[in-house]
Length: 143
Image (cartoon, rainbow, N blue to C red; front, side, top):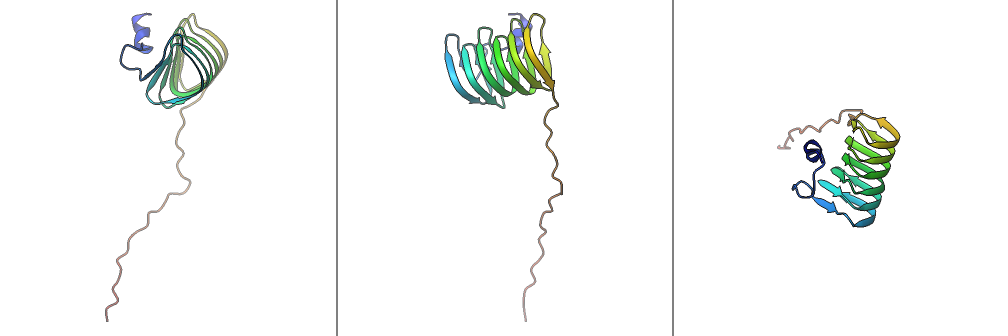
């Protein structure tokens, strides 16, 4: 792995990974997490997070994925959505639909699917401004 790619796709030893599904492991189901998760094994199901998902070189994933940031070096098949960006590094193989505002695909990557470049979700302002109640002094009823 080149020095530049190793900075982008962290290893489990660099201290930035909060959870690791290592080589030789297999998991099926729904994964939700905080922080950064790296998968080097096999996973099938659904993955949702406001964090970063790193798919290591030996990983095989068949899942619908919705995360903040997705970094791929392994094999992924499914609908992939990233709020911030998707980066696909050699020797990755990706099959499916990508939805993200920023996309990087390195030379040598195998991509079979479609891509929709969308803007980041913007919070819509409320239609009518909410008026805060104003406090009025209470007049005493003195005779």
